[in-house]
Image (cartoon, rainbow over all chains, first blue to last red; front, side, top):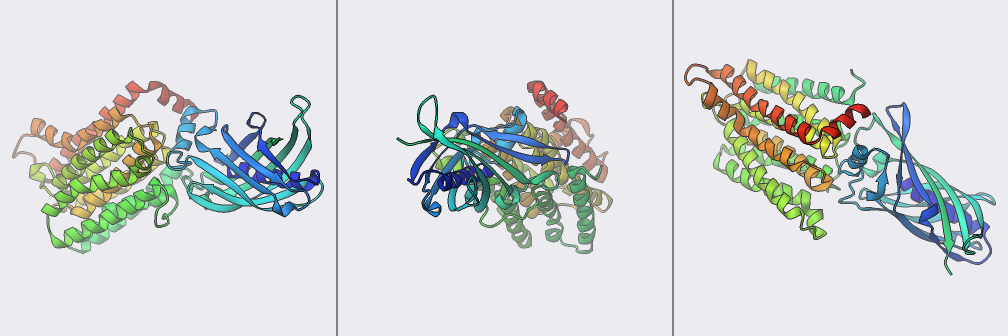
Length: 192
Length: 291
């Protein structure tokens, strides 16, 4: 989730860098956005999980990327891993603890441009009651008008890595991986 | 085998339990010997969760460690004071404090569904700690003593392991398994060179830590089979009931009697497991396929 949030942040930054000169506010289109994570299982393969319920908005300021803004909230209870028993375990107190920590948030703090289509977003990820900085690499895929609803949209891909132990999720370290890959694909609609 | 984290953890705890329990034989003080079971439990926690949690604890899982630690220290003071009445008072009060602290986030959210479960856990916790205290401080001839107390604790954790797994906490299953093996090492020493009784730190520290783990899975993870969990309360009584029914008075004594009483207490583990298998066959079948 942190990775997803970070990726989203990065996307926002990239958009800010590459878009038109006017700052614009965007809202994430949940139906075309995805937040996934992957974690090593016993060294054999990576387990993939996703969060189906999240929301976010950002402001892109192409003339001054550093002033861009980003805030994303993910409902931890929306976690899915294609196995009900595992979902129950991961939502429990030992892992995401959705009862005590129903949301994870990512608030962008630093937005940087690498080139025309890439950049990084660093932000504060709050997960499992702990807040730590996370940086996402972001690629701005496209900015333009959606041909169906005619609204200005932006599409971003973000990738990042975090250590779950940094957030106090230490169960089964050494057996289940510490590093968590974050994969975020975002479509966002410009606010009218 | 050693690439299995549960086996590795169990081995560490077994070695620790064996070493500590052996060392404290050199010190003829119940207060010191009674620190060994909670030390094993705390070590099991650190092995399972790979951390000594920060203070103040963030989240219910981290609270388990500090509950066990504080309860152990309080019990140690009571053991030094050589009081029994205060033990029993704490056995009644401590579960309420533990369950309320673990369930606090749900109360703060106005979740009224948590109230009856919390009350049941409080009551069940009182029964468990009270009985543990009575058993651990009793004599072999009265179907108690340190060996029986350890057997009851181990049986409680063994029985809770599948309840926790079903309830969405495979980590609690590991915590219980690792602790049981460590306590088994302590029980071996108690069999070879018996002590008459265990003090309050063993009961409050280990039992309190265990109750905190149960409360976490029940109130925070929230997927537990309450009927299966309720049957854990059979365990502190099964040994005494079995002894009353099956062991002829004045004919079986000492350690043999304690082992038999302990085994009868542990037989309740089968009852709890059978209840879970009958009520949730699809879950355990899916776990078998998954593994």
